[in-house]
Amino acid sequence: MPRPTGARKRPPFGGADTCARVRICSRRVPSFRFHGRVEKLEIARGHDGFLRGPPDPVLAVAVYVHDASTCRLLGRSLHRFRPSARMPSEVLPDVHPIASGAIDANQDFRYLALVVALEEDGGRDVQRLYGMLEHHRLLSVWDEAHSEVEPFSLLAVPRELAWFTPTPVDLIVDGASASTSCSSDKYIGAVCWAMQPRSDVPTAPLRPSVYRLPFLAADRKNDWTALLSISH
Image (cartoon, rainbow, N blue to C red):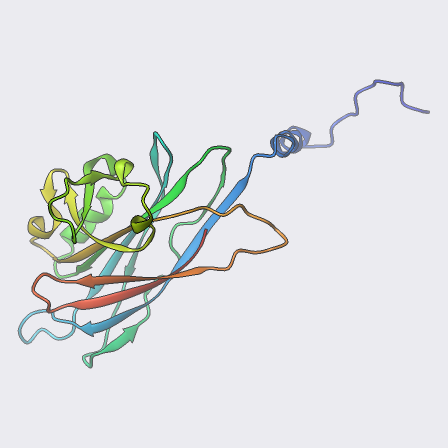
């Protein structure tokens, strides 16, 4: 029997979710995907103290979604490395993936990454700084090459071309310098940079970008470079 003109088709089981997806697609809201990996750590020099063997590097990685008025954490991850005594060397992490997620947005935004490197001894500062990555309002950074500049909150990091390259930064955590507030573990450095999102096109998967993150301790005894591959 033909359906009367104008009659509404009955949605299939679970049709409410299907309709919601259709409505989103009908508004043509761009979809963005972010995923990445810590590939390896290059160690040019490493030091864990007199007669204590090779260092125990740790990277704490946070990725934020940043628009004109808000900054929110997409995700964070922790990566440990176990280098041999012989250096220079390249070391794989115990965990490769970093934060990942899908974002539907119809306004301008960017990703902001902050990576903190520590040499782990007691572990309390690793725990503390990893925890603080959740609370971006308590974090400030500034370019080490421009010490006369006031620290920026993560929300206020400039939208300038220079910040789209991994930039070694000084890190302020809850009003105190990370480099001087660490006592359980050795602070090596931090790197911050922005990334422009690219709309997700299913027929053309995004090729990952490779980022080199330099970490050089103040005493120059630890000189590391992390390699990250990120699709954004």
